[in-house]
Image (cartoon, rainbow, N blue to C red; front, side, top):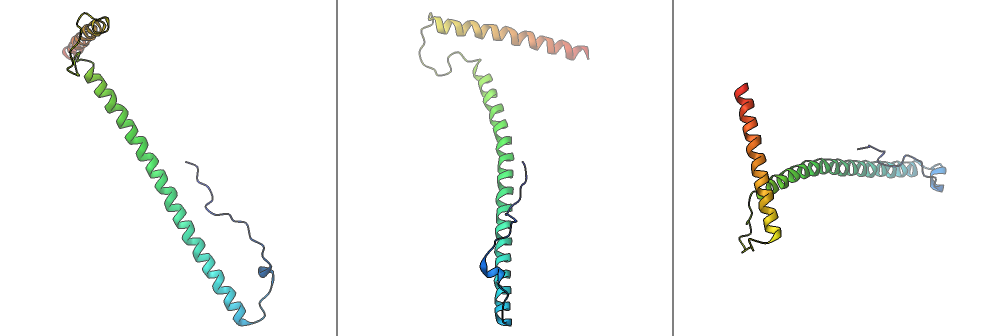
Length: 126
């Protein structure tokens, strides 16, 4: 996140700014208008700062939640790989696609068994 200036700092050139007030009433009037402009600017700056901080916090939250979502989807995908008939619809057991899934399932089961034995041996060695 790159912070930047909230409001432009250049001065506006108006004809009324170049005039000098002739009376104290005019001077007081201009002073009150200047104070109003400063207060409006301060409110706008604080509102903009709040909005920027909200966006930063929301982006941090979204990054965190998206990481959790990816992990959850991977976990569910991993759990579903062990089920051949997870939708409980009838299957042609001699079909090439189902046969390929059975072979992959058996292969994954063997790999899991080998990994389990290796972990067990490592635990016993410690």
